Length: 124
Image 1 (cartoon, helix red, strand yellow):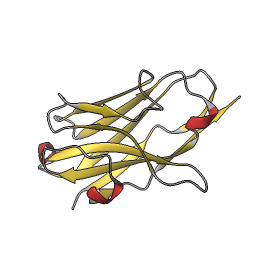
Image 2 (cartoon, one colour):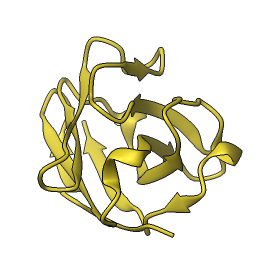
Image 3 (spheres, helix red, strand yellow):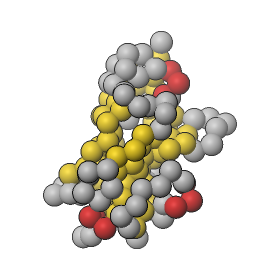
Image 4 (tube, helix red, strand yellow):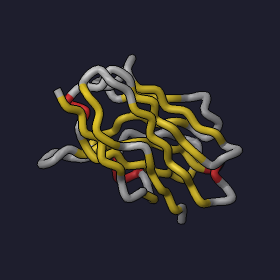
């Protein structure tokens, strides 16, 4: 089991930027594909972005393509989500998730370990 701790959320104005970080406590971080999901009130949890074990392969949800960038630093056991040009529709709790293995997935059910989430609020 991987312990995941997110940080970097907060309140930002529309058009602004934030960088989220997720620290993973595991000696085998490179064995995991990592992803960010988000959940707005009264909505299902939504895939935002994912990265494979070595950072070479990345995937993005349609609503964030071109604005968000995922990366990982395997030396620090950390995955990042750089978010630019934020808009109020990006307001949600953002969750970091880990999936054992080399393949990314868009599906919530395929991720075994989750962080507690960090709130991102974008105001007009």
